[in-house]
Image 1: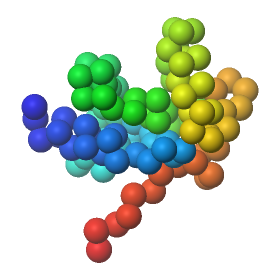
Image 2: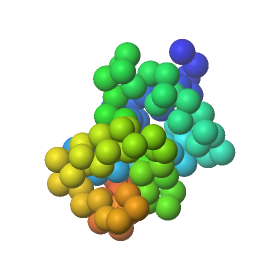
Image 3: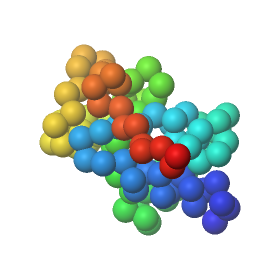
Length: 105
């Protein structure tokens, strides 16, 4: 695993229940601000193997980005089960639910 991939996996593991993070946010935290699509790749290829809370990762608009109905509904239900309110069109209030990790300063 590359250092970036290791960082992404660790960051996703760190997202607490009831919070969400965006693909771009995770990319920035992992040290590569322009690598949101790589975060998608990591989620797609490693979520099951590393038991990642993939459902806590959404797009920059605060929406569930998955296209297929089964995965979309699974993400919606998983977030709702953790207390995250999901609105119409899979919208999530980032001001209320976005995870802000503690700074290391």
